[in-house]
Picture (cartoon, rainbow, N blue to C red):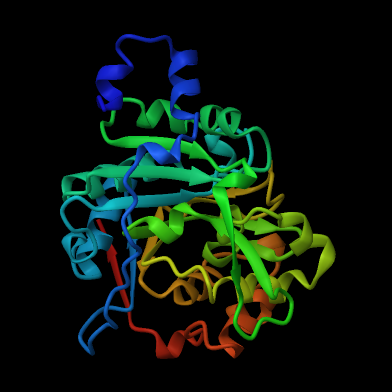
Length: 314
């Protein structure tokens, strides 16, 4: 298979978008999902880096042990940004495409054989990927494929052990078959859940979001989903935070120029809750229902006093 960089030289931009949006998952040999060992006592639990996105992301990887700790040669890596809406990137309602590009490049440089950037968007998938600027950022990077997860055949049903709001859920097959899943949410407010960070972003990896919103308790369902979808890395794009008007925007943008990275997804969200006054209200992790419930069902640590944080400016 030729890299996207070479392919894009011989086809129109529209045909390129259609090609990478075809979603032909069967063209890949999909390896088994891999878990990482628990952090040792000296490992940083949370990296918080301020600066330009490329430098901040690279440094954040260094602070959590280096990218080669997470990426092995020939790995297939799935990156899950928030690309839900066909909005301009400066609205802050989707993950900054520069952040996605930087993570994809670092993963490939570390030895990954292929990278799939995937999301089940709220609008037409390829229109969302195009209008947010993601297609333009990724089109010249070899080994990267964009797949909108908008066919039910891309999903498989799994049980949710001890689930109350959800007993089973259809999740993307890709995340069962990749080596590494990197959750790459943006930081934004949300009308229904107060905030949308890492745990909320996992809803872009399920088929039936309507049931979460209409058929059960949304907050409990998000927390329970995080027990069955466990990304190896969560990297939160808080470069420009949509602090009001979320999840779609437009709204008030606060330029935080911050990247938060960890193997502990709830810790990332707990710290992000303290970054701004979301929806013009002072918040903390305990006041956000899906985060507090996730802590109660042992998804991870929510108390910032118990989380080791390494902060730097670059």
